[in-house]
Length: 617
Image (cartoon, rainbow, N blue to C red; front, side):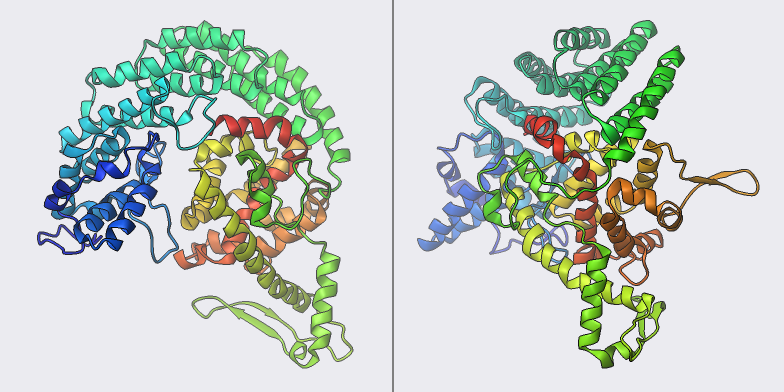
């Protein structure tokens, strides 16, 4: 598909409206029970191959068009870009809606929309037309109708979700409703939403009452788009939370927060405050299910939440005393991260290990593809290599950046085999390069593609991880979830620029959880947060106890030490280019931050993380 402009001339390689009118494309998908169009692309591709074998060029063009449109990566939570490419490697990518903006493609899609019967296909065709021409109101209305029909089909059981278990309520229906509501609000402005989308939202809320997570997601949409009065949502949320007191505290916290928001919108501040307190108490409840550093993390979140609520000073004092005890326990507990993970029997990370496992288990194993090696082992390996090539180690080393500026210089070694510390660290960093490249090319990327082929991962799939992790500050949870989603979607540019800047602040957050102030007071009495250089020098021993010494050494080698990639400094100075984002160093750094986020959750993974992730499928 040529996306260089609005082409007027017909292309022999692309389908025309006449082609679409001549081909019965519905025949290729008539037996598919799937609701969303994302599962139809393979059927159209298969039909295209059959047509090609039969020499039917016209049918090939039509099926290529429809297969391309159905191959978009559906991202209903992203208002700016609801569809992205399913595949991108920095130079090539799969289709996106703007590829079909030219006159010929628009006419062909319009013709297909008139003939299409499958609601998911109708929604995808109409949405693509509307995204390419926001004045096309009829396409917007057709998209809304298609999405609502898909959601209704899922509720009634006439259609099936692409992902998830049939016995569970399909979250996919909520995503379809979300997209319909967003389009409806866009074309309605401040006016009333179309009746069909309002009725669809009400039906979805009624259908999700048996699943707290699905009900909450739907209720938040109803609140956001004014489907019900705020007080109605507030009362319903409070009743649901009260009758579900045995559910996951993190889920109940969000329900109480919704109730508080509803009361606040209804100008009932007393009830809003009461619900805010209940939401904060869920964090305390979560803390008491944990121990050590995890407990301290949840208590800090609870105390910070209570600080925003008036009249809770005495409650904060009690929790602060409890926090100090948890922080003491954390120091005793956080000696080492070397332990068996109670998920599955861990062996070499290969694709066969991930077959047949649930998404929650896969995401846990993904975080344990590799482990940081002790510095002593790395030094021994570097010395062995230097001594095996004595002439090369005699000469000093200079590293330059992309502009030719010298960014690192180390002296040469000695004939007695005693290598300079700087030269040794450079050798270690150089040796780590092939190791990281092998890990990314041979383990991470195959696993990422395997998971992406089975699940359309979004931020919500990672929220259970980041919201439980003592490595993630509560105010940054969505940023981490967004970064991990982009990482797993193959969007290396976004993942790199979202995740790498988070490391330094998370290290400070880890120190705060054990009662250590990572700031410093300047001569003018202004408090300033310590940089990563100061953190790794002044607090290295404590960080080593909390995260393990090999982990801190690897953080130094990847992000700080000029002998290595020094990604923190490169990012801070805006020197990480698009190509650099697709390098094994950047990809490894993103995965490493994912591991740092997960590694303190491993012993609780089966009990808390896996069930929460499975609810988001």
